[in-house]
Length: 331
Image (cartoon, rainbow, N blue to C red; front, side):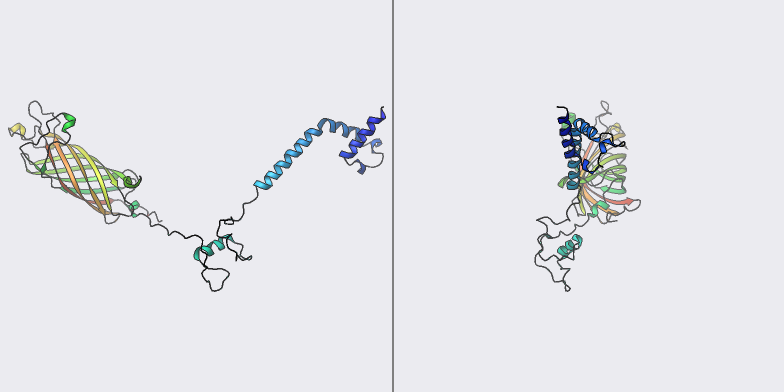
């Protein structure tokens, strides 16, 4: 009963480990004290764990070989032009060369460069760069001079907001504003379809002559904002803008002129729309229609009634870039 397990253990050891390679009588050798017993004991204790480690390493090796292999040559899929070419030369293994062959329609294996008849995909022509990006861009500075002729008198367009009478006064005015501005473009061209464009601020000093009306002149400082609607590759750019400011007019109301202005300090509101034409990134002109309102915002009341001035008419302007030209997007 005692010798039987020793025979079984020896058979198991012989199956797992090639002990036959050891010298005869190894178990009695002083350097190998009973190796069969030691190996059998280690196998019973650690054999299953070692097998798991071996399987894990094997799976990792297979994954590395499968997923870490370099991809197949570009353009060799079933839908690619190169895969559909039955005449591909074995000596021409360069996918870049074969791709150029398909694009320009010439056969690199032919000495005459005869065009092939199986061009797979047409090549799009590169689009022209939009020159407006050299005209409208962030932090561009311009100086502009604008002038207008505003002879058409109307009621105050925002009477419904202040609860005033929506009517036109008997005393009519004609204003001739002359505006010198510094314009600062806030951003680059952005937006979706018809709203594509950019925005600029303006800081202006103006002198307005009054050829018709009780007063004769008006000085003001105005601050404005304009939205440019910029179609791609178009030199004509529509815009809308608004301005507000404070100024001084030689008021005639305190001198007894009825429907004239009630005090010298007044406020300005201007709203306009038009289009600008750009000759180059440096020069441009504009034309449009502007509504202009001048009043003291009821500060003269109740002593003198605030009638205000409300006129509109055409405006034109000239624009000149300040500073150096923007580096072209092509460079």
